[in-house]
Amino acid sequence: QTGLITLDPGYVNTGSCESSITFIDGEKGILRHRGYPIEDLCEKTDFLETAYLVIYGRLPSQAEYDRFRDDIAEHSLPHNGLSRMFEAFPKDSHPMALLASVLPSMYAYYPYDENDPAQVDKAILRLLGKIPVLASWVYRKLRGWPLNYSNPDQSYAANFLDLTFNTPANRFKLDPDIVKALDLLLILHADHEQNCSAATVRMIGSSQVNLYAAIAGGMCSLWGPLHGGANQKVLEMLEVIKNDGGDIQKYLDLAKDKESGFRLMGFGHRVYKNFDPRARIIKKHADRVLSKLGINDPLLKLAKELEEAALNDSYFVDRKLYPNVDFYSGIIYKAMGIPTEMFTVMFAVGRLPGWIAQWREMQSGSTRISRPRQVYQGETRRDLMSMVKNH
Ligand code: SDX
Image (cartoon, rainbow, N blue to C red):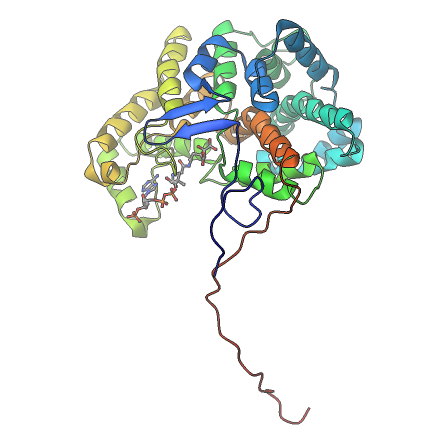
């Protein structure tokens, strides 16, 4: 039998923990980071400010922001050995296989003393500086392009777009609307309480392993189609429905048939039971970004029709299945020219501050290793009768 479920900082033997980073009210569709509503953070901060808030617990002063930005830029150059690792991977590697693989190896190139807070802070800056570069290398590796390096004079979002798309033959035009839309998407993914990948980071980190290894675990958890992999699956699902004559009802009926194994990707959430506030914000911006870019993507119209039909279907309403953060995000990524296979990588770039914050909080709290218990349902004690009598 399991013991009584008690709250503790590090999941020592339960599935829940105490945290002060993110508050979610699933019934009311509330999401706050360190007390600030996500709607305000999207409107009044940029991604680095939200990252600083999520990690260190308060918004930075201008001087702190400038120092944070400059320190991240200073640590954005990945070791040459990491680029050689990228060269060794097959050309058609899964983007998350590439990104998640180099994470633990960062400790080989940047070992640090976990007991020295200054070195831990530097490891955090190295992650924030190098992940956008490594993410851009994933995109460029799959195209056989030479790898780019950070431009410290640009914002975090602009730098990522530049790193990813710029080639000598085709100077990428940094459209301010695209940069702002990416910055918004990164803010919306920054943290989300004890989701599967954040809980994984805390669980791995509780063994006192280094930060890079714990973040690598979070990356691998996010890779799954039920978690961060869903944004890619949403676009693929919408394409299938579009190519099948846009027969929405057919796919709603398929999603109700458990035998089919088909799920409406981008729908449903373990915590949000009325709406995902992030989906509302992204849906609003999808309209704005696409019309600003003069893009008339039939998938956006199809997504809205699908949402409308599902919200009027008792199967989905009864099960409180509404669009989640992944339902509309891919449509904006697509408008930016980011291919579906990179969507989960984008999610990881946005979620990195949250994983770091969860890891730091867990490290500052309980020093005990997480050790969930089980309800044993196997055989009771049995005597071993030797199968072969004469040996
Ligand atoms: C993220 O935890 C987080 O905060 C995650 C996240 C974050 O920011 O970190 O918000 C990001 O991962 C968002 C979720 C992305 N995944 C998807 O969009 C994949 C599709 N969604 C589902 O697989 C599902 O809704 C989950 C995984 C999101 C939630 O799963 P739950 O809470 O375990 O729900 P469930 O599987 O117990 O389903 C409850 C019922 C079941 O039917 P019954 O057995 O009650 O008859 O709802 C049905 C399910 O079959 N159901 C769906 C469905 N999701 C649930 N039916 C059709 N389509 C769906 N998408």
